[in-house]
Length: 102
Image 1 (cartoon, rainbow, N blue to C red):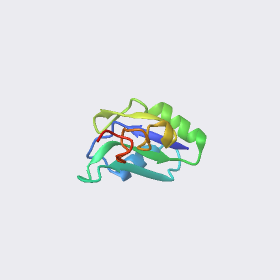
Image 2: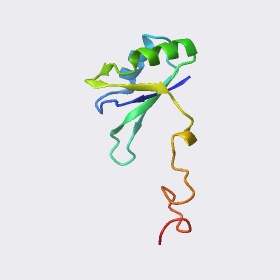
Image 3: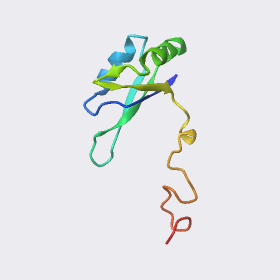
């Protein structure tokens, strides 16, 4: 199961998040999202756990818990198209001049 983790402090590291989730079960991967230019954390990331029951327990127990002095937002990750990724074809993030203002 892929888990969304939000409100992560910038000083956090992948290994810190992995250790937190490993108390509930095996963690397959941790990806913290970084800004392309500054390489600073954007404050969210994703954890993958193959055991769905362990993942559900981690979600229910870690949502709202303090981690590096910040309350985490933890939930089941939604597919990218439901999160409003940069795939908008009519304006928005699309830089194709045909669809935006000139």
